[in-house]
Length: 126
Image (cartoon, rainbow, N blue to C red; front, side):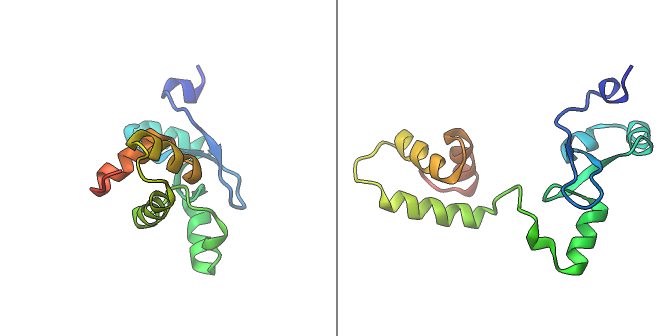
């Protein structure tokens, strides 16, 4: 049996740094037991640190000042709120909540459901 199938690991991607190691998403990594993580590490897999980088590439990029060359995978909530409020203010009056979420989601490259969830977490009405 394949080691990845044995541990039900999915959604792999290559590190975007110089090493090109295969990364396992952080949430999946922590659901695995210590023995499984050790087996996967020995097989050459690493936990995703941030920005699509393994921990070694992340630390190197941070230490050399090149971390900004790697795109964030998550948008900070302050940026999201600022962008959403700007888009909301440009929409015509009377647009339904669902339509606001759809239009803003399209412009922010997010699904309306993901945008709605992010706004609810931030305590902002759509």
